[in-house]
Amino acid sequence: MEQEVRVRFAPSPTGPLHIGGVRTALYNYLFARKTGGKMILRIEDTDQTRFVPGAEQYIQDALKWAGIELDESPWTGGPYGPYRQSERKPDYMQYAIRLVEEGKAYYAFDTPEELDAMRERLKAARVATPQYNAITRMQMKNSLTLPEDEVKARLESGEPYVIRIKIPRKEEIRLNDMIRGWVMVHSSTLDDKVLMKSDGMPTYHLANIVDDHLMKITHVIRGEEWLPSAPLHVLLYQYFGWEDSMPRFAHLPLLLKPDGNGKLSKRDAEKHGFPIFPLEWVDPVSNEKVAGFREDGYLPDAFVNFLAFLGWSPGTNEELFTLNELIQAFSIERIGKSGTKFDIDKAKWFNQQYLRQKPDEELGKMLLEQLKQNGIDADMEKATKVAVEVKERAVFPADLWQEGALFFVRPATYDEKVAEKKWNEEAATIIGQFKDSLQEVETLDAETAKNTLNEVLERNNVKIGRVMQALRLALTGVGSGPDLMNIIEIIGKDETVARLEQALQQLQVK
Image 1 (cartoon, rainbow, N blue to C red):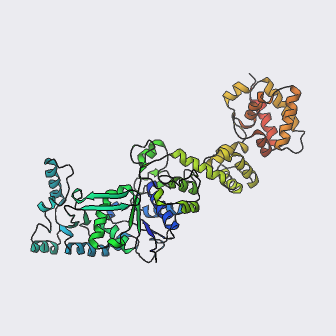
Image 2: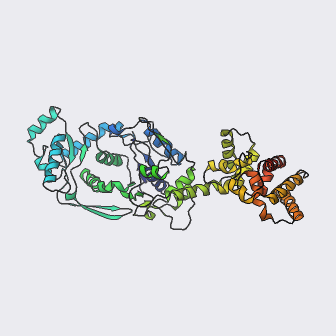
């Protein structure tokens, strides 16, 4: 029987979830659902000094907003819990001690000052990357260099120590990455990473290997920044004798700045004025507020569609995919190796497409909510008509109000440039006669308004182009916008006449 696919997303609660993290979660989710597998979330909170209140809740809310469902997590539970590493703390030490007993790891008693002195010595000797490794460990204070009885005495006295992995001096470590193919690293380039810290908490390297093994994770899909650590992780699987159950690795390409130079950062987002987090984040210490895609008006479907394309391609020209369609189309083989430029204009384009596809009534509800917020009382029927009329000009739900306000609010001012160019005696005469003719009409719709205007124009032998912008100015206060006859139909006869009367009184003929 084929083994069930089990993937995990393992964020740290150290602040808001970056868009790159959401993409990692999304790719894990798409792969799990495509293969009929399970999506697990594990909170990696072994570094308690970096824990930020509210960050775990933010992760939960962000994934829920994006539609990423979890099969096992700290909040849903599951057969392999607990799903917070801090709650699994008692389990890790036994694995580290096992490696020490098998000669694959060792106790190190070096103080921070001694470690600094070692690095300074190596720098002075012009060593390019000073590190605690197969060569330098033999000059340091650890269970490889100290007599056995002294090591025992130090441990019994409660002296602080860490447990470091013992990296082999001359060995080639190989990894077949699902995106990058074979990756080969010589062990001489690796350092003896700390596995257990002096506070009794494991480092990421030990904890994630142990947890992935115990949780039966079959595929580790994570960011490219973890690729340098992958050989160490492969070595740990070998040291524990877990090679046969080692997950397959896929290291995702970086998200790059809009110009393609370097990794996308919060500073880039602030500089260019776009969000980098899925939801708004308020820092619990500084109270600083950082924008989120949701609060900026992005629809979750559009956000997910945009995110999926930051590194993956379906292999066709098709761009609009629902979450279910993404699941069907997704494959790790179609993820690129190189970094992807972050293009906020593309995100806006996706949002525009999804907004246009919304049912008319849903658009009407969006607009109605915004009308209430602006103190305007309107009915659902009119709100829906207006939303449908302006949706082609809208990128965000808030644009329905920006573009549709003119249907509900009489102009308070008139565009001076348009007035100067287009408002003249001829225009004022035609508009005056049009107003008088409309008052005679019983039922006013777009067709009737158009016919009435054409009759006035023919009577005066004036072409429509000469007065159209002036008429728009009189009704809306600006020189461009939705179809003018549709505006007249929606605002109705009384309001149209009132607006034309106001314009004739307030606009001066040059």
